[in-house]
Image (cartoon, rainbow, N blue to C red; front, side):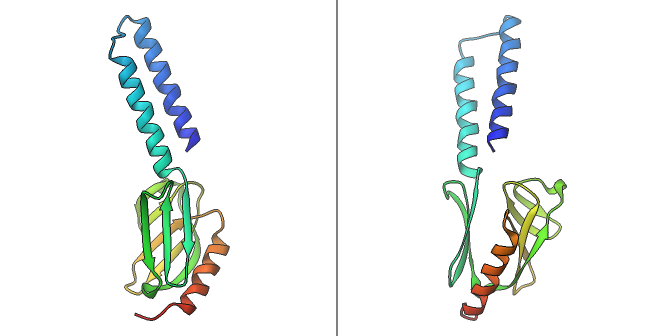
Length: 144
């Protein structure tokens, strides 16, 4: 996410430099710049990391500061398996051919299969550990 922030700020800086050199700088530009920077920082804080917590009854997946999160009751989970995402699917919150995916970096993920047959992917740099934690928790979760 820091790379994206750096690229966004560099592109904006280059655009503002050309605009200034061409005589198009207006008094509103510093405010627009501040607004764009604040927006990029806010998105970075909101979506810059992904935390997964497995308890005896739920899986909680939270981006950044936790403003964007999802709680999955273990009672509806039938299994978890490590998978590899396609680079075409990108990062963030995405719809894939296998269902929803939440991911911030890399291509490794854990695919959760619900009792309904639907699937949900969680991006992680520790797919084996997360898979083991979820499958272990399912054994202790109360049934539907």
